[in-house]
Length: 310
Image (cartoon, rainbow, N blue to C red; front, top):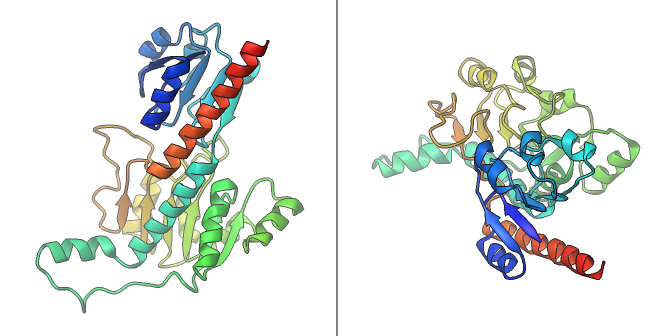
């Protein structure tokens, strides 16, 4: 099969694919380059950080399959995929575990003031009696978007001794029962954001979720609450978050996803001491990427066998 790998995946997986397939790599390439390299490709493998537009896919008359090595699809023109009968396969499971652990990394670091403690200690200041923090145990964890990733976060919260509530679409009795089985009480969006001590965001970026967390929603949050965004840049209004962190009562935030991402981009939150910023690395563990690579190989090996059989 002729494969375009448009995002960096686990290196061993690339080498294995090269043994049996015609593989071209163009990691995070711009549209002009993608149009050139995709011309004769049958498969695209991608993560976030690259835009697979209709204009790009139009250049590949033999394109049949898109493999999203993760969960989000906001960087893919899904309308084009559907209109042209292309197959889109997402591989959300391995990354979900990594993102869920990243959510707790943020919450623990914020609650225990670890960045300030680290900085002062490096400067020779022994601030043992000036630094304090909060427990996660016994606190309420609210999950906005209790789907695949959000449920993983909720399960960790339950194990940590937190009271976990969440909201999800569609809010059906079946979804409520699914979450209840994991120890998560399903409720509405307003209760999640207004009553939680820690709020973790896990929704896709759609027209309906753009600026889902805005000035009004931030004002509804409990004084001293912490917000974690591992969803997509644009789900949380960054300027409104800045105001809430500097003029409001929000205690802190952990942000892994940004409206403007890439080398040279500086977050409008960068100057704030009560914010932890990371460069969209939520799913980027060695273990998760190795597992995703194995799944990609299995999918394509199966397709190759089918093709030979036909």
